[in-house]
Amino acid sequence: MVTPSLLALAAAVLDLPDPPERVLEIGCGEGERVLFLAREFPAARVRGVDRSEEAIREAVSRVGLDPEGRVAFKRARGRSLPYPTDLFDLVVQASGRLRPGEIARVLRPGGHLILVGEWRWLGRRTRRHGFEPRGSREVEGNRFDVLRLRAIHDPSE
View 1 (spheres, helix red, strand yellow):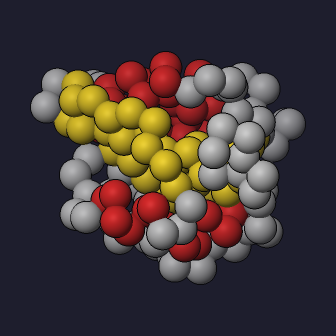
View 2 (cartoon, rainbow, N blue to C red):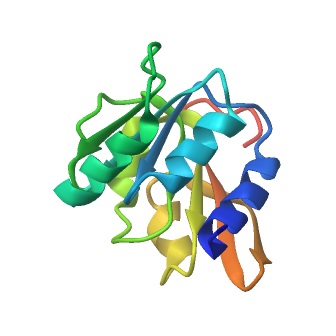
């Protein structure tokens, strides 16, 4: 069964200008959206983090044989992501507490952030960390926002 958040994510990825090479989902749960992203972007390495050890165990069991290591899951919280600075081209979050500063740290300049669902004071919270809105819509009653992290020397500014 397709969940509303997966349907909104499927619509949101259509708004991306280029396919990402490295993707992270924060609050991945049992991995449904991570596996969708891996299918949608077959050349990308896709990572999922969640604070629940049980959810991560379930997500890992769903991956099956992955000899290239394209899909991986880790137990982690959104406030301290276990990845280096500027690693990801795309970060996705559909639940949990939004940490735009930590997301901006792991997202490369020019990379995109997809947020699925309603987020309080989204513009104010993301703008001060260098994010600019690229679009938002509602699909089957579930909202999504696509934001872009400004490049350090953005010629469009």
